[in-house]
Image (cartoon, rainbow, N blue to C red; front, top):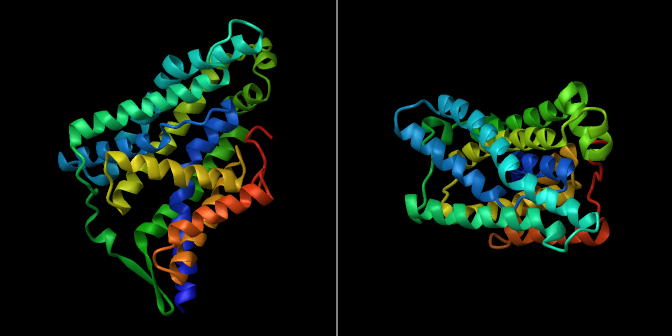
Length: 299
């Protein structure tokens, strides 16, 4: 029964990792950018929702505010920071002046992460916080001899719904098809009238919207502080790599594998849960570097 409980908890934990990793996978799949600010942005969403709840807003209404606000932030960040960095990549690839080259977007996101982490520490201090959820935090559903937490189960359901919705958006809408065309060949897409810069910004807005939602669920389920973003980025990155870079359903699978590895590892040795996840991540890199489902979002 203990092993069964570890497996169930691992799947639920994997849902949280998949929700966190969805935006990271989308940005990489469309623009080949690894957003190092991903973790601290999730923490920012948690702090923002916490402030809104403390001001008297119901939690569901705080989510309604945070998600579109983060979508707008994503569009602005892409247009103001990432697009100029991507232009530098194109200049270097064309044989222009040597500069930061393909490291430019990575360095920009790193700068955002460092600045935002320090800003959050100045505003909120290093004290840990948690979004109050009332009875939801302790509510459970009986499953035979097991009790499944309602909040983790809700997180898993939201993760599956978000990934399915994003995948459907990419496959069935004109904007999604344009986004996939830009991901495949920005130059050819521009010749058909598609604006690559706008499509990149739309993709980042969508990724930030999912990230904002994930950040709220992180704040509901665990204690967080300004420095917690590093751990969030690590787990999200591992889920993306295990699943396959740019593959949304692979990200869900990667989150599940990582969550199961951590909970089963903790069942074997309570102090080795996180280490077990890292070892599985390393094993996937060695045995299957492309991940479990190596398929880009534009495929």
